[in-house]
Length: 209
Image (cartoon, rainbow, N blue to C red; front, side, top):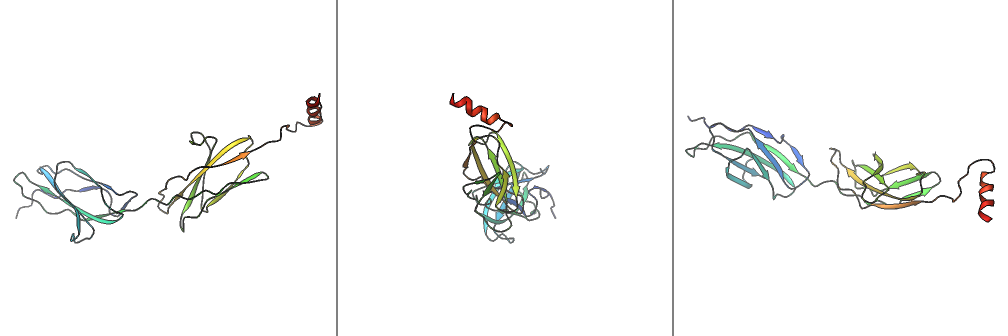
């Protein structure tokens, strides 16, 4: 009974790994007496519904792309120089799942000394990632905060001007979706700040001279 070449040991991904895109990076350890590898990806454990069948892989990695979201199973075997194919490796699975949906940020509510930031709920078991910046590109982030509910309350910024806010949803596995389109709010201040004593009166007198 011929045992060589031995089946490759799969190095990645772990069984049941989740990929937030329509492709998965597969890897295995090289077999010394193998000249190439034969890999199969199927929709079922019995490999009756094969979606990828690669018989001439020379490297020890393969990017399984062009797949729809769902659960898949894969296996691989070594091919010797004389064309003999060894036994299959253990079967492992992976899941291609869409990223969390992108929430919609509602117009911020500015009142008193606080600002309420709220987004549309994207469903149960999601948390939310809020960011505030002075620029719409979010190059300089002022607030970076997470919440288990689709809203947070923050102190009103001291500086006047335009501020931008965006949010992203995070699922129970810690995977985050895309940030929403930014919403903006404006902080306005009275032209004369209180400086104590008769300072405000003095400023008003100077202004009318």
